[in-house]
Length: 312
Image 1 (spheres, rainbow, N blue to C red):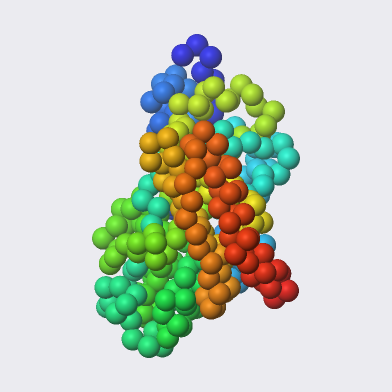
Image 2 (image 1 turned 135 degrees about the vertical axis):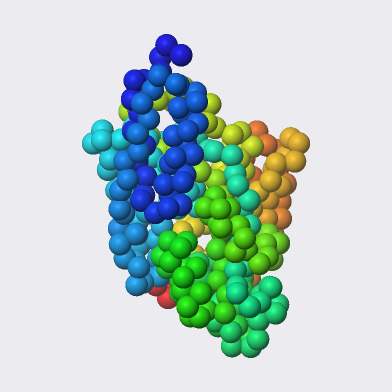
């Protein structure tokens, strides 16, 4: 392709999963543009450095993308690859998401060395998760279980489980599958029981908004169905001012010319839980998410969210 660049640099976090994601995109770009030298710039982010506090307390998932955006801004990288569930609902001015990779399994995975499912855990068992979304849904269904914070990369979390710190941990199935650790999954949790995080399982490609030259080059990496579903989910979260400080989740699927979507908002302890389903036209995916958010607000989601604001 005559307009392909001679060199592209991908900014990525240095965790094993992030590097898998970057190498996955690197391989796709090299297949598309064999003459292009595609390199990866590994970076450590603030979110990777602070591991002794829950994400909700230290500033949220945006801490995983800030340094990568600096690399885009100063020109040391051309594109950044993110897990879409780590990308803040509102990008800083000057940046653009230009492609969404095909989504891996979006479900949450139950991981344990001694039990097959959450239903099997004895009263008082400790379940590890860093996600308020997972915590609220587990507490709503299993109030007799104890939830404790679990931070670190996938391997660190598995090690903590193996050391006996937890009876079970909940991780994104996509990360385990991508790292060839699918054998650690004891069971997949039905999305109706654990509604996934917005964008879970999908990869996003971000560029400096000034780099119009990259838009067409990266366009073949976009998977339309995944993009539409993630757009709907992000529209839902954006309308509710969602972040990892808010227990909410949304899961959209495309069925023909419609987006079907389930979403929820909850209190951290799961005692208050609002969930709803909606279907809408695929041609305006974000509007479907906003409509679902409006339905939940009409049911009282705004009261749950304002109560959470008082707690922070």
